[in-house]
Length: 264
Image (cartoon, rainbow, N blue to C red; front, top):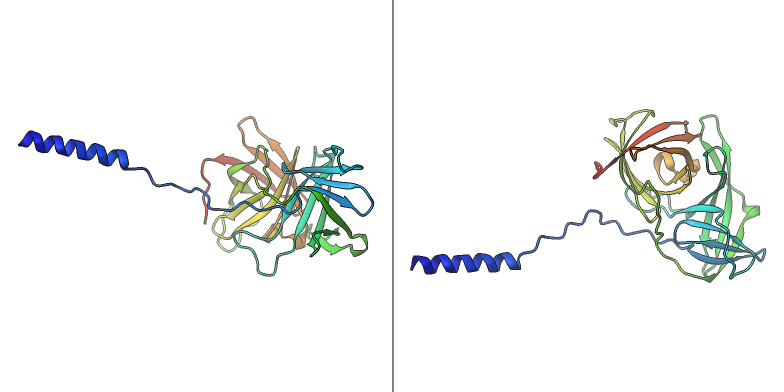
């Protein structure tokens, strides 16, 4: 009888084990940002703008011609953790030219409107450097132009750059309201980055990487009302990197890759 009970228990445990599966662990419930610009657009001057799904783009004279890779771009719609209710301007930033240094790169910022007929109107932003090392941002409405889609459709970007992943970063900026020098960053493939100033606020931004240039725009110190923040990045042999800002305080950052950053 004891042998029968032991055999039954063994079979029961085997069946229980074969039916059990570990619960799914979702590391990031964030939904990728849909970028409304991906595709090919006809400009009013007859040329074409192409925004690729890998975060690069360029101009072309013909709809079917392959454009030169002349810029990288970010799109920010004011969404994610900590978004201020007063925000919500759709913003496009492009970075091209000499991308070996943030001071040499050609960075342009636009506010764009999605019109009811499917077109988009881009309004360039004039950025005037102020005494506090931030920009005064005003729209250049006379230079606004409209793009009409000819192919492609909205979709999430799929970036491939060495910054994708989670990081802890120290900076030489000021600490306030109980914050500490360390930040957490999570660069995502859709062109967004979650940011947490430890002991203070957590928020999302948009970003782009082009060669040695990193551009961020979003909330708080990266608020689009202050203009984009561009930095020159230097990758180390150990896989970590440093970033030196161009304007916006000219702060310096040291990023260390981690498996899982600290979040609020």
